[in-house]
Amino acid sequence: MDTVLVTIPFSHYCEKARWALQRCGVGFGEQGHLPLFHALAVRRAGGRRMVPVLITAEGMVQESAAIAAWADARRPGTLLPVQPAARRAALELEDLFDRQLGPATRRWAYHQLLPDKRALAALMARGAPAWERAAFRLLRPAAIALMRKAMNINPAGAERSRAKIEEVFEQVGERLHDGRSFLTGERFTIADLAFAALAAPVLFPPGHPFMPDAGGALQRSARQQVDAWRASAAGRFGLRLYTTQR
Ligand SMILES: N[C@@H](CCC(=O)N[C@@H](CS)C(=O)NCC(=O)O)C(=O)O
Image (cartoon, rainbow, N blue to C red; front, side):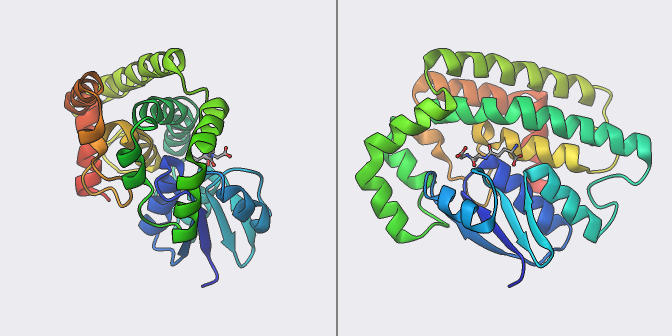
């Protein structure tokens, strides 16, 4: 296979890239790794530190937004509207979700799940080599400490992220208030895809290829928070996109 997506399988930015490639009909293989082990694969592909990285016959593409644009160029108009103003509107929303929603949902979800061995094992159960899973189990305390430090995962960070998620969900709810089907109008675009994929760590959408319903592992207050987000206008929208567009 010429085209390979290097991922951490359950990463929401990787899910965004995977969904974009599939939506645009691109054939590709996936090479999944667990956190920390991904770094070597990224370097081998010629990238810098983070997944997703797409290896193509023409070269390497890094960053979910660039991968989505690359995919759309294979079937123009699938995710990025051709009309300039509509395209700009979709890209602006994608950028907002990439910069604000993605880091917040990740930090809040990790804060809830990292202390729970079983939830973490379920999250890491599929899509990465068995030896990485075994090694991660051995290294778990050190690996978790590194992840906490790198992503600022602590009670204060989780609380700031909760507030950020509320803010973005409210903005999305307001946009949908006029009854439109999708964020920029009546067509599904990269804005919708980015919202659904990057909100997934706090919505646990059935139909997500790599996210088990870890809801059972959440503490009661976190479960109540997830239920509230799922019931909000933005949450219902994200869940609907997974049912109807994924
Ligand atoms: N802006 C990047 C964000 C990618 C990102 O944050 N990737 C995370 C996984 S969710 C990662 O690779 N983290 C590992 C690291 O930073 O070493 C994108 O859209 O692709």
